[in-house]
Each structure stands twice: as structure tokens, then as C-alpha cells.
Length: 284
Length: 123
Image (cartoon, rainbow over all chains, first blue to last red; front, side):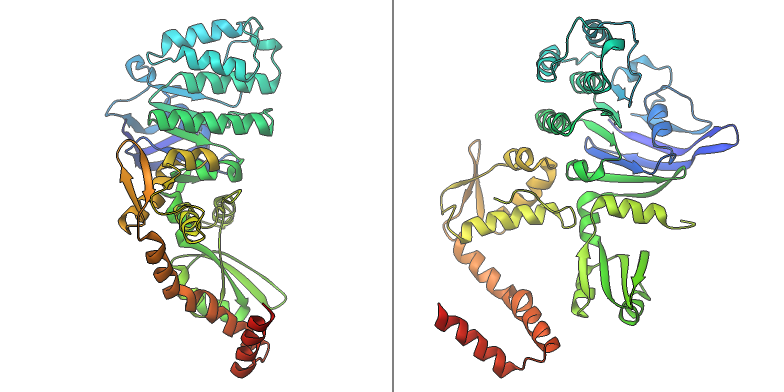
């Protein structure tokens, strides 16, 4: 499904949660939506899922607005970091309700994952631990088979082994049937290899949208003496720089080869670090 | 097989290099099957499109060929092609850094050559 975001803004009182964001997601891919706290990620995902209204601008999914549009929202599943389900429902009732709502619901997968994560079908949501509740969210998100599945920090309380399991099943499902998966998390180093494309939000704006592989290829850290590095980065797009004891490291966009040819020390930048440097930039 | 990939270098290149290394050191031979896109994706938890890109480049370079419905296999000439390719980058990848370090340490060319010979004699 095609997602078009056009000059999307959302204001809460006097604060701009989103400010005139525009971009398009054409294809079913795994997208990483990254940014610091308060960057507007959750607001965006809620508008995309038709749960709240924009202040101005719009999100169109295959040309239609998702708000109050059941025909569309049954193709979108948003799993948030908590409070996805009513506290008094039993696990089996949660599954039942979602199976009615999502036409492509995969009951077999849901049951398999319930066993995998050791959930008790008869337990009420309010009796589940944080990790168990997150597991239920993950199960619903995966089993919904919604063409647009959005995970907003879905695994509070889940231990490393359970998260790893989640990545495995997510990939299996994605391989079996391509769908748009938007994944927002702070545990970037764990999942960055899953992303095909990365979007970085900062203070309500989109600061970067790029294929993950291009980012790995076209950003680098160059180190050397302050004079060498300063001379090299004069005509470059510099993300950030730091210095210590006469040496300098600059984080730069562009071709690595030029820096290598000049005998400077060149290293790639992990996506997690890139996000930090990008969003640290003052007045970006 | 490497245990994990680096997030600071294109993943498709790392997949490509791994397959190349396995062919060069004979752990997969001509006519044998290499892991599929999905096998790589599952093993390393990487995006399948990324794994596919690495494999497809090797197909384009005639290192691998596809048997429909069966998988990817190593071509007859794969090892020779790869050795030729690696030779071309040997100078810049290995000799150049060696010379740079030597220069920093004030080791001149004669001394370098002397060291190389010494290494050979010890083997």
C-alpha cells in the first residue's frame, strides 16, 4: 500500500509535535522510524493508523485518509508500547476481537506464538507482566497480517531472548509475504540490520530518509590531526565533529574513498550512532 | 561463517565477501550450493532484500548461477575469477597500508623486502 504524507502537522496546545512533514513510502519494506524522545514518532504513527487527526496536512493511504475509515484501518495494525488492550479482557478474547477486525488474521500463527511466548489464554490482561503484555502485542501485530503493520517500541519488559525470537518471526513472516512494517525503537543496534530504509525524525521534522545500505556506504568517520581533518572537511557535508589532544574525528556524508586516498583514518558509522550525531546537531 | 555482521559497512558487501571467501578457501566448491537469501536473512537477522543484493551481484559477476527452484550454485570458474579480482585489489588493500605504516616507522624499502624474505624462510 502506498503511504503519502503531505505537509503533515500536529499541534498540542502550543507545541508542534509534527511540523509540515512530507514523504512517501511506496513499497512494502521494513522501515525503521528513529529519533529521540519527543521527536514526533508516536504522533505520526497514531495519525497514520487513523487514531488521531492531524492539525493540518494529511496522510493518504492508497489515496484515502485513514481517520474513521474502517475499510482502511483493517489494513493497518498499530502496536504501541503499552495499553494496547482492555485490562479486563482475557488473552483469548483479545485474540478473538482482533481476528474479527483483521480480515487476513492468521489464527494458526497466533496460537503458535502464544505457545512460543508461554502465554496463558485464560489470563486477564491486567494480570500479565509487562513482558507478557508486550508479547501479546507482538503476537497480535504479527498475526494481524495487516498490509501496514506498525510497531512503536513494542517490547517494554521483554528480555533479550524474547526480542530475538520476535525478530526471527518478523523476518520469517516478512519473507513469506511482503508487507509494510514500520518499526520504531530505541534499541537501534539490535534491529538496524532488519531495516531496508531508515527515517529519522527530530523535533517534529523529518531530517533523513534513506536506504539503510546507502547510509552505511555514504557516511563515515574520518580521523587525523586537527589540521588534516579540518582541511579535508572544508568542502564536505559534516554531521558532527569532535577533538581530543590534537586529533579530530569528523562524521561526514559522502564517498569514503577520497578520505582513504589522503591517508586519513576512515571508519563506517553504525546507524545508532548516526542517529545520535544527526539529532545532536544544533539548529539542524 | 562469521558470527555477526558490522553495522558500519554495507551488509550486502559483507554477504558477498563471505561467499567469496568460502569459494576461495574451498569450503564451497564449484557446482555446490550456497545458502539462499532467506537462509542468510534468518541466520544474521538481516533484511532479505539486502542479502539478495549481495547474491545477485555474484550472479552478475558469474561467480554464482541460479537453478530455478533449487537455489544458487558456484560456477565452474568462480574461484579463478575471484582470485584474479582479489589480485587487482591486493596492492591497495594490503601493500599500500603496509608501506604507509612502514614509512611512519622509518622502515625503508630494502628493510621491508628483507622482512618479507625472512618470513618466507621461517615458514
